[in-house]
Image 1 (cartoon, rainbow over the protein chains, first blue to last red):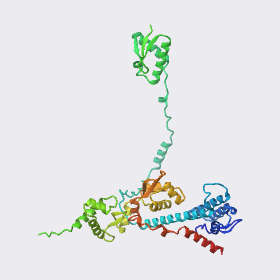
Image 2 (tube, rainbow over the protein chains, first blue to last red):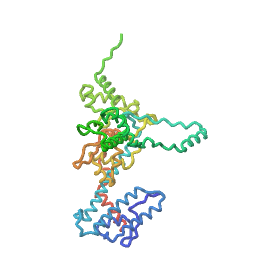
Image 3 (cartoon, rainbow over the protein chains, first blue to last red):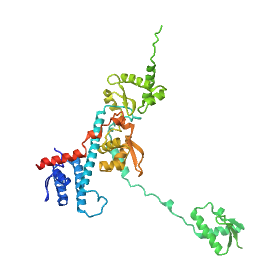
Image 4 (cartoon, one colour):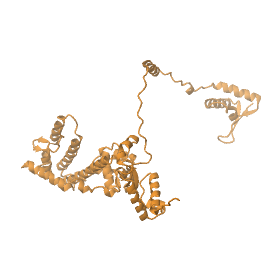
Length: 241
Length: 195
C-alpha cells in the first residue's frame, strides 16, 4: 500500500486546480491570493483521500496538519491587513520563510532521531552492566488443573451482600440534665463544697456538657454559689444554704 | 629451583585497572583510574592499551570499550543471545518516535528547556521528557532565566548508544537539508509540475 502523499494531493477548488504542492509554492511566491483559496476544500480532499485507505497514515496526517495550520495562519494574516497585531511586522514572505526554517529545523532533528534509532539497532548486541541489572522475568507457569465448583464457591462468596456497617458508635447519648441536678445536690448534702472538674473528669465530653448545664441551672435557682479565680481555672461549687 | 619471572610494572598496573573496571558501576576516565591507582596518566593509557588487546572481540567474552568519556567492560557481541536471556534492558527498550526526537534535540542542543523542545518539535514535550528522565537518558541541568528547567543527556545515554562522547554525533547539517534546500526543492517540484 502506498503512503498518502500530502504534496501530491489533487485539489479541485474554485480558485485553484492542481496538486497541493503547487498551491503551497504559489502561495509562498505570492502568486496566488490566499484569501480566495477555500481551506475547507483542501481539508475535504485530504479526508476523502484518507477514507480510501484501510489504515491511518499518521505521518501524512501530521505533515498535513502542519501545512494546513501554516496556510490558515497566513490566510488569517491576509484577511486582517489593517489590524495592529503583535505579529504585524511579519509580512507573508517572512512568515513563509520562518515556516520553511522551522520545518527544516524539525527535519534535521527528525533525521537525528532516525540516526539514533539506527544506532540503537546496531548496538542491540552490545551488553554491559548498567547499575544493578534486573533479572529477566521468570516464565509464568500455567495454573494447575482447577475444580470449577471451587471457582463457583469463591465467586459466590464475593457476590454475597456484605453486612450493613454499624454506626452505633457515632450516635450521641444525651443524659437528662435532671440526672446531674440530683447528683450535685447529693454531693453537696455530703460535702460543703466540691470541684466541678474533678467531679466530671471521668465522664464523656457530652456528659460533661450536660453536667455544666445542670450546674448553671442550680446557680439560677440560687441553690449553689460558684467560684473561679480566673478563666479556665477549676470551678469550685458551694452550697448556697 | 623455581624460575622467578621478572614482572613488568605496567602488568601490575593493568591488573589493578582490570579490577577497578570490574567493580565500577560506570565507565572510568583515565584521570579517575590514574588517581585511584596513584599512577601517571600516560602509564594508565599504556596499561589500557595492553588490556584492550587482551579484552577484544573474538578473543574474550569480556570486551574493553572506550565509551561515555571513559573505559568500561562489556559483553562480547557473540555472547549477546545468552545475555539477552539473562537480563532486561529497560533503558533502551521501546523508545518511541517522540522520545527519540526529544532525545535528539536534547543531545544536540542541551542544556535545553521543555518549551524550547516543544517549539522545535511543534508539540508539547512533557511526557517524552518525563519518560527520558525516568529511563536515566536525560537529566536536569539548571534553569533558564525564566525558571524553566533545562535538560542534558547523561553518560548513560552515551553508553547506551555506544558513543565515546557527544562529539561522535553526526553533524546536523549532514543529516537533512536546510531551509533553503527545502524551499528550492519545493519550487523545483512545482516548476516541473507547472510546465
